[in-house]
Length: 340
Length: 276
Image 1 (spheres, each protein chain N blue to C red):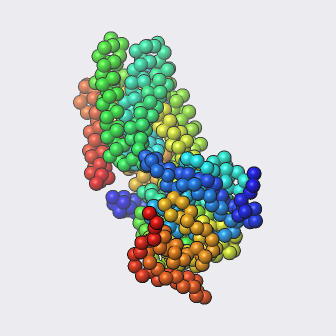
Image 2: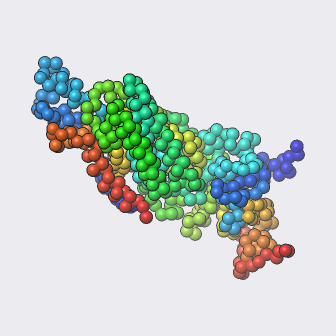
Image 3: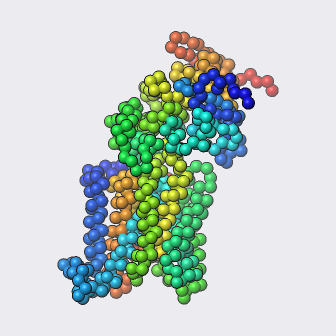
């Protein structure tokens, strides 16, 4: 495995070993994904008219662009960014590339947390990401109990299996809640698969506070995150409080995931695929890895959502299904490479 | 309260007092009632058979392990009360078998050694850079600095982790079997490096080591551990005797002193004479 990663990395570094190059490429990808998402829809919008449709109130598609397409793109971008960042943080936290908010059950925990607010206080939608955060945090605590109960760092298999078991329980709770309160709860299928259908500016606004908060938090602990990559003994030897740093990173990941879940439901695999791929380009240092993952994650979900909308129009597929179609095989590939 | 004789005469850097340490999940102390002082400026070698508690003792001296009973002091203050980064500026350690994270380069690793010296967002200063270069040069890894750790041999990786500890510019180094996994030549070079650090910078060094002749050559004092207890502490020639080798290591051996150090000739396995 190591030599495999090393081979790809050295080949990629022949293309460029400068993170700035990859960052600009990812930014360009995000912009073009957003542009195509604006252009494609029930009413097609020629690329040449894009600026006009956004800026001029007289343009026939001005309302469609501002009320439907732009908020959905913004949502997709924030969801993608958050999930990719959460994946990168969790991979560092458990020191294992197989980690992902979906696989570890953090997404499912956040889902239950979100549902509780949706059902109990339907009028307080601003609270949804925060109760989702509590749910995600609960999942992390439960996972640490399950996987870290014995001495030493648990292996990949133990972590993944604990996540699977946890997720089964949380999905059952989600299923019970959505079926018992079918009148108020979102549809189980759409929620569990993850979908951006019908998202608007209010969803973006709901995601912003927790997202901005975590971005600040992540920025302030970049160096600690790098140290977490080291062996526990080595990291605490240079003065890091390893347990606290791990807990902080897990909390940040839970908050990012919670924000994403509150808008899109349980979208999976973005956090697995994106950081692992980006690590091949710029290595494990977080100063480059996190911004690049954020941009690439945003681009991936915007792109996937556009395809989900357009592929079988007028039927809109849930974006989560499409992402799982890509992410699932990649997960299998990682398992096959990583496990003995 | 009476001060132990040892600590009264010489400046002590690091001190374990009536230490009991137990590993999670094992209902037996790995270190039992150990008191040991590492004197300022000395090289102290911990020797003992497998499972005698060398690593555990080093780990608890370096705050890696929770103490069941007793206390470890660095200077006057208990180690657990020291702010972590401040302690890391003075005390560095080389764990026995550190895992190397995928994709991290030698340079990244050694840079981490400057963490205790560099504030939150501050970039590395001239002094940090100099410390990095010195550390890399000391372990002869300057040429491989851009290599990822997993592309190194076991010995090179070991030296990279040592460079990280050196980059901390500590006044005290704890090394858990630093010569394990090294070839003969690198073993000798590493021991020479430690002696140089000790002589030129006055770095206090405590290390665990299996090769008794190496231990005798490098160390000012040797502590022999046996089943979690200190069997003997003192200058090499006094401590490493045929009797010690029979009692602790259970080998029949002849120990001769010459001008180049101790010569230990192992004749075969031996059984300590015990009175049941």
